[in-house]
Amino acid sequence: MKRRLIPLAAWVVLVCLAPLVPRGPAEGAMPFADRGAGHPLGTDALGRDVLAGALEGGPLLLAVAAAIALIVTALSALLGALAALHRRAGRAIDAAADAFILVPPVIGVLLVVLAWPGGGLPALLAATVVFGVPYCAKVMRSAAAAVAATGYVESARASGESTARVIAVEMLPNLAPTLATQLGLRFTEGLYVVSAVAFLRLPGVLDEGNWAVMVRDNASGMLLNPWAVAAPAACLLVTVILVQTALGARREEP
Image 1 (tube, one colour):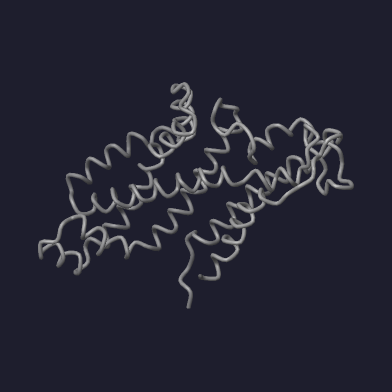
Image 2: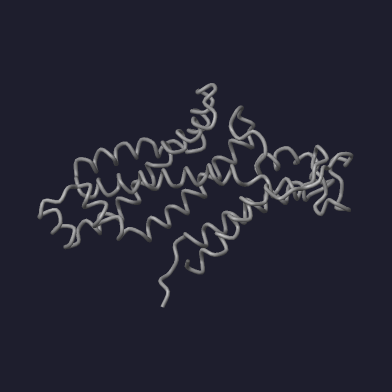
């Protein structure tokens, strides 16, 4: 594993394993109590330990954001490569992408989730993918166009290889740096959208037990115990920084 991935991997392991650590009950604690015995970061609006809540509030949020990033990046890579190989497909993909790009992703996701009563998490995933793919596909098409113009791709097409094989064998491996960068960006966007939806209290969509909900529910007591808001917000920030450090665009190493 490359060194830049080690901090991200360690953070993911910590977030996923933290809920399995047994903890004692927190009955009798006052809401928004300051740091004290048994509560290193104080308590939240319901008198629960802030540190325990922050450690337990990540797995589902990260899993949904990761699923969004993987689906959006995979679909965008396929559409971008197809658009680079076939002009007609490229024009159709560009037209559809331009239409969806006009709608801000957060607004589009909120409209779909609110218009789909009972849709819950599937509605959120579907909407985020639909509004996330167009822009990413245009980026992937630009990167794939340079690969499609290379001699080995042209030779493979001239020899009669299928479009699927050309994309899978000849193009996608050479798009690995762009794929990694887009994966990091799509994860960040997915985390942002999912956190916004959870923060806005949309029914049935990640409405409890995650960092965004902790920020929302504890904002009223921020002056009494700022850690109740700062701890989950810091977890979100650390996640984004580690993902972008591991997968984001970077200069070539000597």
